[in-house]
Image (cartoon, rainbow, N blue to C red):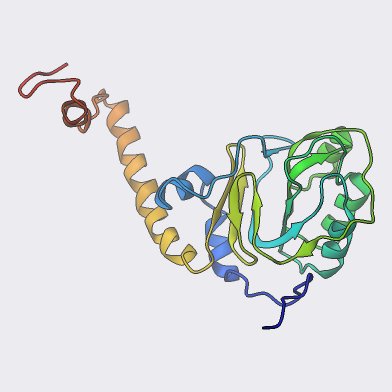
Length: 228
């Protein structure tokens, strides 16, 4: 049985129309309809709360503190891709900074998500390019340890396959399997409509949660016939 190469160049990406529609939804909405799974640990957060990203995952696995394979990934990624980097959550050295991220923007990538540290925070705010990371550190990385590109990775505690739909905003990052993404968008449309109707009801003074009494009884908090 042949072994997969460390660098996989050709991947099947989530459809561009799906990405375009997904960009209009909050990460929270997509996470809810996807069964409250697929979200990264909250350590992976946007450099600025106004940053949003949506696109197919272009996955990178590196050893802590080494960014050799990220340079290779930047050279291989296509416009619209989101680099998703498994940096093992390490924050002892920055994996990327202004130079690399400026190149990503120039190449038309949709954004970068790093489960690891980056640097040049103030310059990145001016760059106006979506970047999510697990933290910041002024120390630079090494550039000589092998890694892998476009293999399944675990970033922020979540499995990410190449080509999966990735959406990030002020709340964090959600990953949806490529094959499931179209169906999740239809559910998201309904979820948004239901929440809008609930907001209207609250504005009219209907603040009671209809499901709460039954849930409290099922949990044994309320007895049958008892109410709050």
